[in-house]
Image 1 (spheres, rainbow, N blue to C red):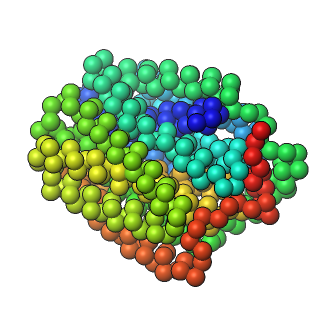
Image 2: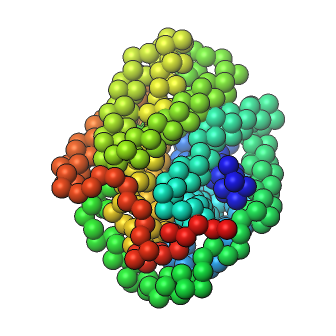
Image 3: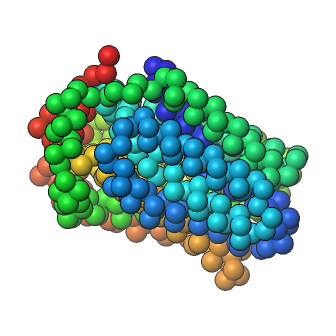
Length: 409
């Protein structure tokens, strides 16, 4: 992987770890802060809502910023937020720190994907974006398990210290390796000539609106289960607390495989990739519900769930680019918000399922229901797009982001 892409991928790994690591240390945070498990789970919801509403706004407000400057500033905000979280004296302060930190997440991920495309030729843009998305996969494979282990051994505050230290390293790597100039002067002039009002018109497209709704529901289904993996594995599967980190690695390995397979499926046929990912997620959730009380089958089902859960990301991102190539950065930022709105929705759905007395095992069935709705909408989207090309088009020089077709030196 080229060093600039590696720096961006590690940055995405860092922000991804900050979001998902809470799932592994929910019991420790709940006990220390004297709140219930569902209440601690709302720390995921608060973060996700901050990404959802803050990301597009910050993206619009920073349209004229140099991409490298924006990336460094966002990582700086992320570092400050995690320092406050590590020092938070109570639940309210921690929630505030999480929301403040989340304001950097959506725009950072969107700009990282955008910059990856700027540095790649048209026929390699999807591959470059997939490499950036690996950061989220490795957040599950390594970031979350390491953070869980640290939190269990040294307290949950140490987890935020670990995240902060890695964020400082990512800041230095971005400063050193990401080029300051990513487009020619004519490219920059073309981009600056597009008003915010013109960019906002992309959201009038029904295909984009439907794609984002599917993103919310599909990702919501994932987080309905993944937010509560620790109590699900402990209380239903009767795994020892020390095994949770190991099992999160199993989940993360599955997620890497799912990202690769989902990306290949999307390269071949975007809509077919979307449908297959949704169907696989539904099957994996039902299998997880059946297998969760039995340790070996539960571990296998967890791996399959991880693969299915992350196969949806490249397919849905490819669909967004296919229908919103006139404003790719803004559309990607909005879809990051959609993913994180789904994260918050999922954490809330899972917590509500538990609070209503159905038990933690039932979160997988709630997730399966949300997936069924997403799959139904995907079929509607497929029917609407049958007359269109389902291949991910190159972003042509005639679009407003002409710089996307130029390969960086």
